[in-house]
Image 1: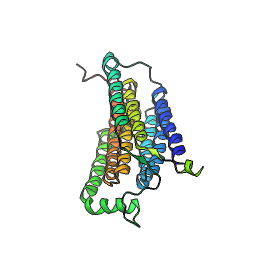
Image 2: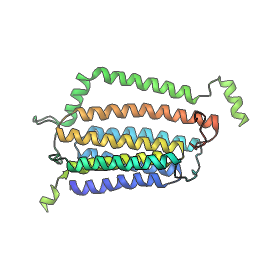
Image 3: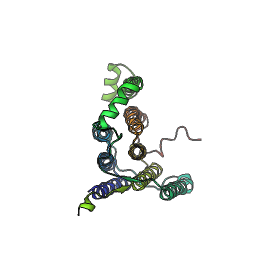
Image 4: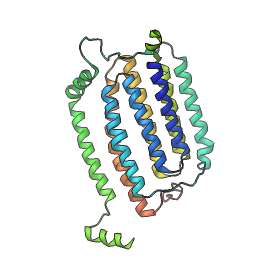
Length: 181
Length: 107
């Protein structure tokens, strides 16, 4: 069961990621990125990260990708002209990517004792405590201050986004310029 | 059949999937010519790293990996909001999303 689910959703992940590269229209890339993120949520479930699977669906596939598709549609982004990148990207980038992938794959495949992932294995060996209990215990007791600081970070990000995306002058000028377009 | 149902997946397969996803993100970052898709490739790389964090948290039975992924998600949410606002501002100033034409800071 674990193996079948892993293969199916790893396949979805890779297919979505490759489709993201092949599609020339941004909206198709955005939709394939949603496929990647939802499949990753299933993989998180297989690895015993239930809370992160839910957060992945809600935050990534929900909020962030809605923002992406919204911006794509707002800017009416058309097809991109297909190039193979700049000369530097071709001559340095691709060999570097291949080298990094080769090194990581060799290290992973040569590493002994990485073990296996089994379904339903908890984060602790203690009886009667689920993964979410352990996670929330750490998050809301030991790491309460960083958690609260994160909310301030998000607040600042919202303010920054509004300040960047607004026209930068009053409502009168913005209406004027909007009419000019 | 029951042995097939309880079959285990090697940790290294999850890590390899993560590495391949990260490389696909880097390749997308290099070959895509649209500002929004370049940004999407960055999201793909972040997701790949998150997968390896969760995998190691599973392997070591440690909660810290999942905590880290949670904070990465929050930072990515903030980053996406600010990044897309910057993209809107760039589009407003240059009327293009092609990264080749946004070359004001190029030497």
